[in-house]
Length: 440
Image: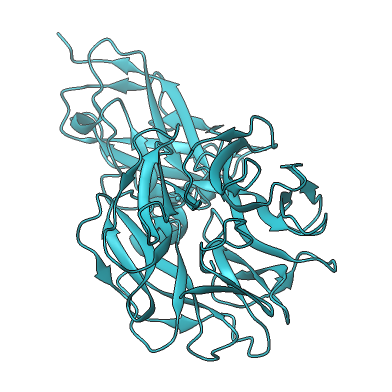
């Protein structure tokens, strides 16, 4: 039987009706302008950061500080502002999982006499039951678009992976074998689900397609590996492993295909578990300590381990809330030094476009390869940008070039816009007036 270990407490996986702990641990006229100063080459792009979709919000976790029955708490990323968000004494509220947009939290609760999956707003309001079955339903995970929820259930005798719509409808079994399988986590592109299974005697990490097909084992050792969690860019999976100590888990990371398995926590004397990535992919939050009962955070490479909770009770199973980035308006100058900004839509040349540094925005932070210009979303024609003070204010501006006929600019258009992101994932948008010529 698979078991969940928190400190020195060991509880059978999803076998107790009370569900004290359910399951294993868990971004033409125009010509190029010769702005050659400070080129921003392709190699300067931190692709792993640019892929992340969100900023770091609050950390949610389960805590036993209010008595023997757990509550879901939320706190700031530095550990401050710890707040009970379920406020349901006796309900035993566990396994929080934040939604992709950060507005909701999934959790499982025994408040109605049986372990079921619930959803609530991020502030704890609107707590709503999603499953209603005499079996144990728990450990839920959102699909990246928020439309589906994967979860584990023992409704068909042994614990398996199921999926349902975000409102609880359409509950469908994905895995189907005699093993015990749980801890599902969806890949950021929504195409795959990672999970753990003891189908090969000991617990290992598997990946399957989102319809349950193509189930593939990606860890293989004599110890237990469980609780997989995809990185926000989909390149890595962090997980628990007992390979270094049969009684104390360590936090490991591997490539999404199972290669490059590396111990991150290297704690030796502490029991670490339930790792989860920060939405920007730079940090990992987990529970740990001598008894495995406090919340810690570390950098994605395992450095900078910092304790966030300090109390005599058990705090475990953290997850990190994403904060969708708001869009920043930037100042754009099409054909710098030219007025009016005349563009011939029939031209086979390129259009220079500058994003200007202002008192409130630094154009050098923009990822040039993320910028799209015009209604057709033209990309940078040369695969790089250039930094130059085009407006003579002493600050460096970002100059990009776009093929005219790729922009979608049409005769009669009076403005053109661009969108993009900073290297940190902040969305930007800007526009400038234009005057189309050569249209007769």
